[in-house]
Image 1 (tube, rainbow, N blue to C red):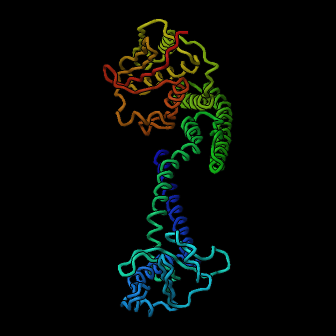
Image 2: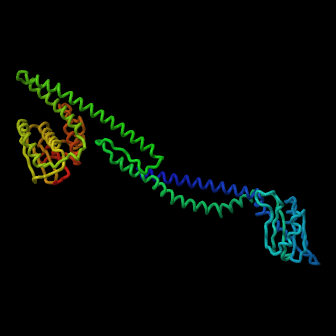
Image 3: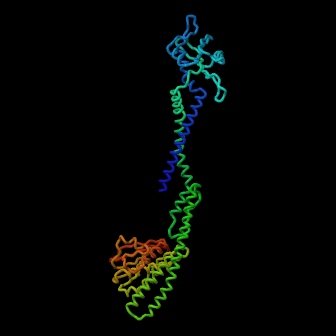
Length: 455
């Protein structure tokens, strides 16, 4: 999910930056066109060259070699279209012909620029406007090589602006935009990846958060300033969850402790009653209440303290649990056996907690296996412990939910549904796993796998 979001962010930034760059370049082009228009360059760009070309085609010589202008239709049309038209035609011998009001600044400038093939004359942008002109040596059919000096050839036309814009766009804007786009496409993902590199640590920290571990917080190192507010908000929320969890834990522990005293008093008073079926049933119910209170306390005591773990021999542990519960199993109509593939098999863990696991599984078999058959406690050499019975078994669709708290397969069963949940939590505390399988001779088989440590 993070990769998709990062990719979306990168290309979102790329597209926005490219559009911004394009807008800046278009605005730059418009500014350039406006500046060219203001200084008259757009007029010079086309109309002056058109005047020079038309005058060159009209230039000719009379019988004495003097320069004259033939009344060509093009020159006639130009005189009508361009108010204030002026120009000077001059040859190498100094002979000239002119038309219109030639600005005084350009009256004798032609001779001084005989060695210049072409020139543009006028004022700089920002100066006081002065007369402008264009000088160019051209070859003509009727007069040979002549120098033409002329001024602006009329008002700028929309076509001129469009042509100038196209020239600027193709020669300047388009190559610049292509270069900037390439740089943006290459650089933006790199910049985003580096800027948000700290989020990888945040994501890794979030992935390590476990519901059973308190005090977990997301790291703030190398996190962009724009994201720190979000990370702080998540850390504050985790802190509030920790406080709520602790309050709930304290309440459950206090409630379980408070229950144990009246349960003990009730049990004592029931034992004082005369023998009979009703007394037995009541004592059984009180025993279940006592077991429930003990399980609640056990659940609250389950906490990850691996530093308090010690070496535990599973073979010795399994043999002891089978021996301790043999009278209870036999009284309920079962046979019970213990099997070990290797001795010893050691793991690091809490011995009392692991003993509680095996005890709960054997008691679960005694309660649900139909009061017949064999209950087997088995320890393998690879850190595996199994408790199997020969009862009706557990349907496969129900095998996942039996470990949830207060879940019972039989609605009318008197158990609280905490025993198997406690078993799973203890196994998780030891970084192990628990699975429900079919028994070899029918029934259910609970397999616990723990990390082996021979130390």
